[in-house]
Length: 233
Image (cartoon, rainbow, N blue to C red; front, top):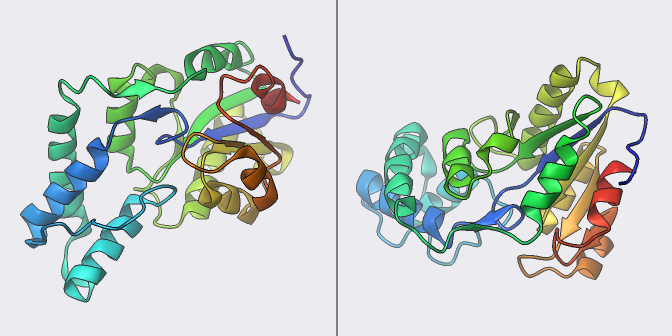
């Protein structure tokens, strides 16, 4: 078992493509919500959701479809989206935790006290926990930064880091932050707040591409035996 570094550490995990796949449930639910609330069918067509925040996806979809996202109430879209997401996830058999995720989280939780394990996700908070609950992961995360906190991913991570240091009972300046994600946007946001990052190649970017972008470490999947050491070193 790797030995954890002496500096208190906050781990912030992305959800979609890093911890789990919901097999497009979020995209379908958001498309349905935009149609219901805004009368915009196929509004999300052509938008790459990977690494995006829910707010930016909605703004991009409505700007393309209607000229301005400001004509719509995002909170109303969120509310209807959550209803559709719950319906999409009910009975969905293809949603699953990605390889290595559960063993990794169990191993990390053995180091609680010097380690805070949280989320750094573009999902709004309620959607994040719906997805995690569907695949049996919600019990591993009791804090994070969410798309409902900010529309900008770096600020979401900053919020998650702040909550993590509160959990550890120390100042953020005394902690190290590590972001775990599968996209360039995860890596970029980590760099923007001065955090290290661990990339995972489960959504199309190879480990070498993620390293070139600025990841401190990168792996094909979280199943790699070296991931735990990279997160604890």
